[in-house]
Length: 305
Ligand code: CP
Ligand code: NVA
Image (cartoon, rainbow, N blue to C red):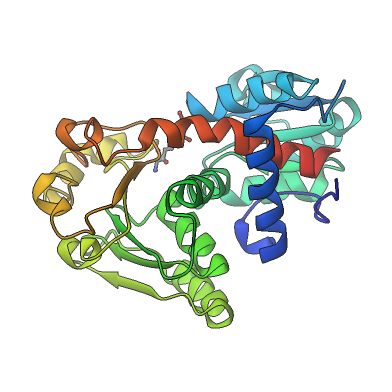
């Protein structure tokens, strides 16, 4: 097995297209048959925010690969009392073979990776969620058998999940149309990263405020929560502003007949997605959630072996 020639996974932007496909290929193999590719290896899992899928998929994933995971809540670490990120990185590098971190600040994760001598995997920041996007593209290929000539309609907040989907679409040549309300659109920084990468792949990246335009002829419809972790104080304002940005059965009518509906989860049923759609025939959200396990294993194996 050829390792990925990078120390860390902080953004899909840093991966070559060949490396992305190497992750997707190994994911497929591990989903079919598990292999103990990381015998006796250790992964520290630092969490500043809650998690169901990311924690369980990495913790169980490393165990299934033959290693062991150690859950480290930020508040139980000295980092919670002011120890520097640099000293934490240098210390943990003496004990562990890899670190997965979920944090608020993206630059904190970059700093951790800078000083750690072991692989650092980004398990979500306020800016990006690369492991989610890689796993989601595995799910899309499972269902659609292709990434070119494929339209993803993303409806909702121009936040971490949308950002990583845009970058991964740009890398792989998939088309994506993001519909967000004014003031909640994807940052210019991500737009320009996406557009730059897309020049090479030919991917079409579009932004609109109209959910119907995003859903029109979509092969994939995707949404994320209106209120992300850390934004709880904006809840009532956001719930009002995002009203129109819901995947429901009337929006589904704009998409292709064989559309698949995706959501990174956790979902706020009745807000960004209706019960009818998330539980309906087009929804692949629980296959999508399962695939986090297989993809996270592939990522760990390719970085930590
Ligand atoms: N999709 C995702 O990352 O889920 P968790 O927040 O439960 O990890
Ligand atoms: N945008 C969401 C994604 C959760 C997986 C959040 O940051 O809370």
